[in-house]
Image (cartoon, rainbow, N blue to C red; front, top):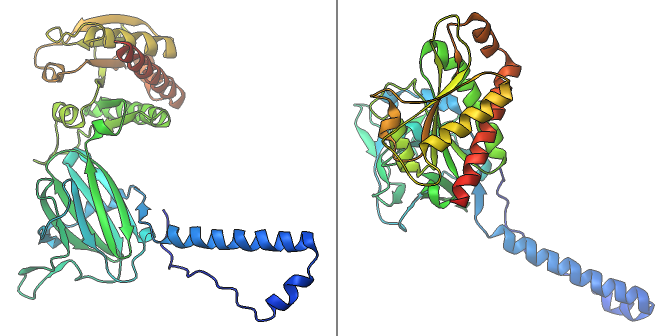
Length: 364
């Protein structure tokens, strides 16, 4: 994260003896001195103007911030106007860009901004009788935000923005003014994927871990991955189909384990038979995921099947598949699912499947 620095004025060279000495320099030395002086002046100008540009604030996760006490949140409101798609607010004196970290809690449609400051009343506070007072420090596009609140902790202020849908965010800071821009994910990324690991107790560990490992591989290739969080039990929690729609994701892949009895082992994929697009649809995505993961883990491919009625696949209007990564009833296969190396291979196979799907969809 970059730190703000003060503006540096141009350096003026005013040595009164400089003119007396310059004619005495040999021709080559004079040339070097002249161009050296020009170089220094140009660097000074570049540094000066770079200092006046807004500083980009880097995103960083701080999951502990999600543990704030909602009872201590002071409700705030937007005031004034700002350009469409943005929110503008000031920060206390002395705050630099390095004092600000953010986290996109897209599964709750929330965006958190933590500001390291000693002030505990800057954005708003409670009176002694617990009446909230809004200091009016925030203004912006009211179509973006459903609600704002602030919570103070030992290290600063946590601004909580409740958004009307899932966005990607960029923050810039100029002097003490921060501009937050919200952008639709589809306009930023060429390919977007939703990975939905099962929330079942016996499957949550392996499926979430494999999804995380696959996401890390895909991030390196510029693929934006959204991971669902089935542990959320609040009204604000987004459903997989809503996450697909609001992010404009290209494909959906669910992960689960099967229960086929102790005798059987292998992996299988499911698809929605009612959704069809020519070229590359749910059937093709199911085949791609099955083949790549089976090869990666050297396991049996049990084929693709129609999803049972009521499955989330029927709610998604995009190529979608459910991949069962193994049979939890088979003790040998379940033991494999607990191994790091096996999970790495599963993630690698899933990663290859996504890249292959992206290539085929691009051709279509």
